[in-house]
Image 1 (tube, rainbow, N blue to C red):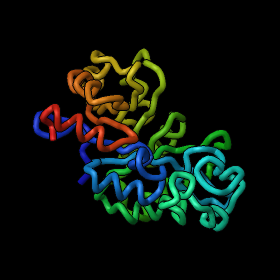
Image 2 (image 1 turned 180 degrees about the horizontal axis):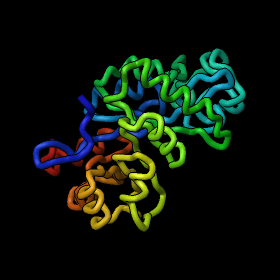
Image 3 (image 1 turned 30 degrees about the horizontal axis):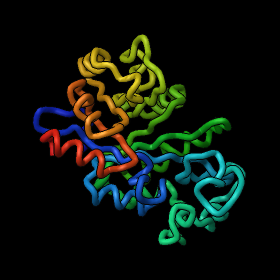
Length: 253
């Protein structure tokens, strides 16, 4: 059964762990995802990039410099080279030895216990093999019900929608559109992600009328009350505990 996205009077708002429980664990790693699940997250947002030999690995930045002990672009490295990197020590010594996971490993680990929003970092290269591998990874892990391809590159979402028209997707924005519903439908998206400054109640209502769910970054417990009043379906934060506290105080957990 597909993971729920639209909140109701009896379910949600839901919690999304941004790059896993990234406030307390090294981002985009299995420890961060495991902690998010244990803390009560419903879904987790991850970032994926394509290696030189065509494998998708979890990495936000174009280079491995910030979050590993290595250096250089992900696109110039083989999977074996990426897998040799330490992706935990930069965050805290106790995470030394943590490896960069592949998308396949994450999907096989989740098995639907945690929904996965897969943000595609397929730029600036825009290698066509990226979308091929994204589709293949989801299919070979039978992950269609608990994953949503996501991204800022809406043309890539539209291409996946053309090839897999029944799949649900997430459109990410850093602005307020003149017509959210039309843009989401053009991209094949059933979930739209907003930053707080661009999340407006009337837009949320219009999207709900079209059956589109809304995700917004949570800034504080008090901000959670504003998001609830607007009807936001998914609260996203690096700190899963913050989201849980906000929903508990609002009587929704």
